[in-house]
Amino acid sequence: MNYINSILVLAGIYLVLSSSFDLIIGYGGLISIAHPIFYAIGAYTAGLLAIVWHVPAIPAILSGGVLAAVASVAMSLPAIRVAGDYLLIASIGFQLGLLQIIKNVEFTGGDAGLSDIPPAITGPSRAALFAAISLSLGVLVVLLIRWIVRGPYGAIITAMRDDELALLALGRNVTRIKVVILAVGSGLAGLAGGIYAFYYQYLSPSQFDVLQSAAILTMVVIGGMGTALGPVIGTFLLLGLPQAITFLQLPPSVMAPFQGILFCVLVLLFILVRPQGIIAARRPHT
Amino acid sequence: MTEVIRLEGVHKRFGGIVVAENINLAIGQGDILGLIGPNGAGKTSLFNLISGVVSLDAGSIFLAGQRIDSMPLYRRARAGISRTWQHMRLFHTMTAMENLSVAPRVYGGESLLKVLLSPGAMRREQAALQERGRAILRRLGLADMADKLVSELPFGQQKLIGFARALMHGGECLLLDEPMAGVEGHAYETMQSVVREEAADGRAVCVVEHNISFIKDLCTSAVFMANGRIIQAGTVDELLASSVLAELYFGV
Image (cartoon, rainbow over all chains, first blue to last red; front, top):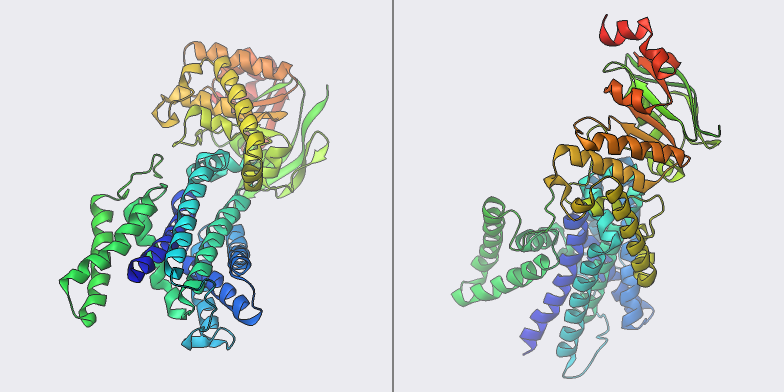
């Protein structure tokens, strides 16, 4: 039962990660690979606040979200002011650079990771409660993003993706819109990090490396970019697939590379056969 | 005449090409100024300089007495510069109505905080915008097009949606870049009457158009440009009678 709960906690976390990344890349058209580092900022902030200052879980998780959002502004504002294309370069630097810092400073636990994060919830139903909290947050984030993109703010996000210059000439501050999208998406990733920290009580820098970025992107691409339901389907598919292939009873040394190959084949297949993903966007970006 | 927009000594060069050379121009409330000249004369470049798509090398631009030439594009739009584009630049994945709904100078929906914290006020604003947008579309005979994707509309109607979007923006200075290209039939008269109404409403209108009869029917004054310079200014009839214009424009 704990195993299933553990999968459900992860499902909630990845629902938040993939939906918030879809807001950035799918709806906003902003190409960044730094989503895992904002997830890490949230996780480490929550973990450290709890360990060092004994901050309770909820304010610690919220602080992680806020710090991730603020950090995203520091990354995106200079890059977007120069030109949109620099965002990708800035995000690569931010992702790799910050992860190196996390690996090399003492207070984050360095390469060995950060352990002894308090459990936040104790007792026999801990895993079930975490699963409920994580999934609820996941569903809330999916609904929040759906609500945003279908409203007046979503209209300017779509207009910005269609023709940035025309939108500027109507008086919309496109730089601010982009920075806000990134801050909201990154802040939500930070919240997911906080849940992760308190559930697993241990953080390792390798959990937040660039491969995470590939996994989250795969969820969004396969599910359907720029759709509310796409990342949900992508998340469950990509989390379910490794569980499904355990029935093949492959040795662990084969299992990990096999999973990687399977993800690769899936992405290639979708790009070739169904680039819009399982759920096609109502407003495909061309 | 209350002056709306004034250009003083505006100069712009791209490498070796001068697109604006010492341009001095003023348009007042109710004026409809026609900007004519051969291709490459610098007409669209002048619109880009006024609206802030490109920055000036020298000179100044005033909107209702306020200097705007150092403002970025979006702030000039908020200050009151509305424009259309030669190649329309519509939001192609959106409907006609949606194109209009994101266009007003003041748009509460631009603040995510407001959207999240005061959904009631947002709903009211959106309802008011829908009503205003539909009224504009009705004026242009496009009421039935409101909910159609703009990319699915014929070229002439897309052109009119671009014009409708500029009207929805509602700036005091309206720059129309070749509004009649591809527009045929009764839309011609509709366009003329709506531009006249907008001018009568106190806007300063500037029209770049190759359709000389449109300029002749509509404009209160005109400027003839060539090679980034104003060659002649006056009434449309004066300009059309000019031998310089005939030589440079029509090659006769």
